[in-house]
Image (cartoon, rainbow, N blue to C red):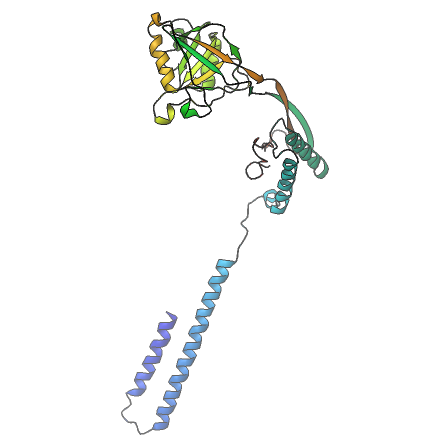
Length: 334
């Protein structure tokens, strides 16, 4: 708009002068020409200045950063440099402890010491440390699953490559060494209700329960299996998609007391189909050896502000451990 107005004004002035009926006054023409030239120069300079001003303003807008308000005095007091100081310390601890700060390692315990000491030294928080216990889960060797169908015994394939395995270990399974074959009972539907377990034939009590994946959690299935006193629990995949055919690695939790394995859909369905005919006398023999399933203590740090309304408590939590494979600085260093 600014450029167009200037150039149009110049053109109008020039055209008015050029329409004079007489050219007998060269001085006026010269002055007019000089005036037009001056106007052009002024307009050009003004245009350049305006353009420069616009560019400068936009450059400032793109290069100037403003820290947004977090509406929290506490949040805005946190500095990246302070965060990096703690992360560097956690890295130092991990480097001196075989590269990890996982639970039940020296790196984890040193992390707890660092957190406790820092809070006690630099804050007025009430700092306390408590402990809870977790179970180790270390296999003494590969598990063995033998199946017997109508007198035919087959040693089923275990592999850490799940696509090649017929069965896989369940985390926190209990060890087992069946001296003989124990009959299989197939739990109707997917074993998520008492009705499913009560409808099973033969009775689940003392049998190895075979249950398909689906509807409820694996822990729920295990709880019902325990309730009906099974000798062991075999859960198998449902085969509803290609990635739901192989066995999978699952956990039944720290409190599990069952012997358990997870089967591929192919193996599970084979056993389920065979068990429909009682004369097939379908049974399994399990050998699972654990090298270490003892419990170990895990520290937990609590730091409370000495003031405030106890009925209006805000709880902020994070985990202080890393994975066994690394220091956990770039994902969970807290």
